[in-house]
Amino acid sequence: MTAEEADRQRREAELLLSTTEEKLKEIAPRQFDTQQEETVAQIHNYMEGSRTALKQGDVSRAHTLALKAGLLADDLASH
Image (cartoon, rainbow, N blue to C red; front, side, top):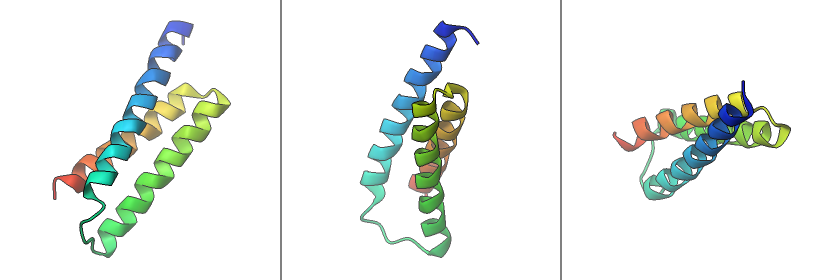
C-alpha cells in the first residue's frame, strides 16, 4: 500500500468512526431488545479495535473495523 493510499484509508476510518459515534448518540434514547443491545456492544468493540489499529499504524485493519461498525450502526438505526 502506498503512503497516499494509507493516508486516505486513515482519513476514511476516522470519518467513519466520527459518523458512527454521532449515529449512536442519535439512537441512544431508544429502547433496544437483547439482540440490539448486543449489536451496540459489537459496534463499540469494532470502534475500539479500529482506534487501536490506527494507533498501531494498521490503517487497513482500522478502516475495515470502522466500516463494519458503521454498517452495523446504519442497520440498527434503520430499524
